[in-house]
Amino acid sequence: MESTRKEHDFLGELEIPNHLYYGIQTFRAVENFNITGIPISKEPLFIKALGYVKKAAALANKDCNAIDSKIAEAICYGSDQVIAGKFDKEFVSDLIQGGAGTSVNMNANEVIANIGLEYLGHKKGEYNFLHPNNHVNCSQSTNDAYPSAFRIALYLKMESFIKTFAGLEVAFAKKGEEFKEVLKMGRTQLQDAVPMTLGQEFKAYATTIGEDIQRLKNAQELLLEINMGATAIGTKVNAPEGYPEICVKYLAEEVGIPLTLSPDLIEATVDTGAYVQIMGTLKRSAVKISKICNDLRLLSSGPRTGLNEINLPARQPGSSIMPGKVNPVIPEVVNQTCFYVIGQDLTVTMAAEAGQLQLNVMEPVIAFAMFTSLDYLSNAIQTLIDKCINGITANVDHCYNMVMNSIGIVTQLNPIIGYEESASIAGEALKTNKSVHQIAVLERKLITQEKWDEIYSLENLIHPKFITK
Image: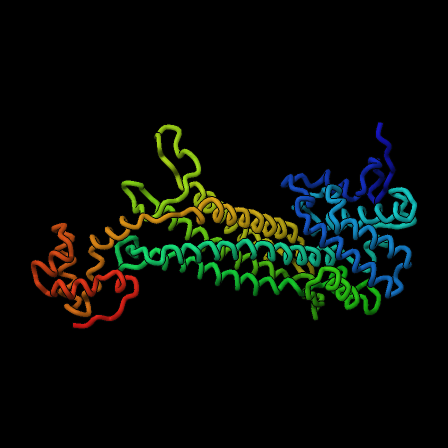
């Protein structure tokens, strides 16, 4: 049988398998919180951030003479091992949990303590030499350690997401250039409007993505203000003089991002407004991406009875009963992912609103919502780039013919023959199925063929210039 060690807390004792680096408090969390089935080991950036927090705290505590230098050295060693990802599997508590993240904080404390004990030549669980609470958690509370680690992890995760998102902007811009001479009909309310190019349509997608990238970068900056040293509620209870400033300084150096200490630690400990703003911005991006996917599905609809202006790469047979049918499965899966992200915005909003008094205990579900949203949407965006956008082709002739057969092109005649006459032509064309050209040039002789050719040249339709009588 596997050997065990006996650990205790104020609720009692438990036998912990000796191979485990986490201890009794993490063990209780595993028993209590079987919610998502997703342990924090699935978020390696969060684990890395916890390692950074514990290392910075140890260095600050040593400087403030709150812990012995040998203890600090062991904690730093254990933290470095965690930062390096060598103990990810030991982080087993569920991402959603009660206790405002206490289980996550204690998971880190226990793992680092036991790594440190072995570094000092002791056995796991010999906490009289190096204690998870007294030493690893010295001058800290879950209420400053957990949100500080979360903010760091979220900042780093957003860096990666923004890079992927920028790839989508590039992909649309390339298609914009590729399709810059492809004439097509623009539409409003799903009705014919005026001519444009397919390139302009795709360039607009790139522009709107670029705007959201900037909004995300702006929102990301809110994460740089942290509350380390606040301890329980922001009063710095049990933290030595100067500890908060020293700790944040070490933390910024270790992570390599410009972290700052909040000027009001009580406010910082309860406030979750940054998460609401970031998630709202992420929702905005998801809404735009989903809208674009709706467009792609419409533009590729058919192939014989829809718009059929573009072709999406065929990825799989589209029906178990209709032979040859191919569905726009990539835009569809991206749509669904966007719906998830949009829903998580409400989760974050309600969780932020649910905080009472000096702490918001709902931060774990905020972390879950934001981590999964960034992961899922990043995967969806990369899938959209690789399996859809890069392989889109244009049906050039079909697009051109639809423009020239459209009633919408009568708009170009407004400056010459006036709105009333143009509307009359449109009405007759719709009723009789005649072309605008036939009515305006051949029958009513409102303009000459030469003038028609000038107005409806490819260059003028792509880059309209004002043509007068």
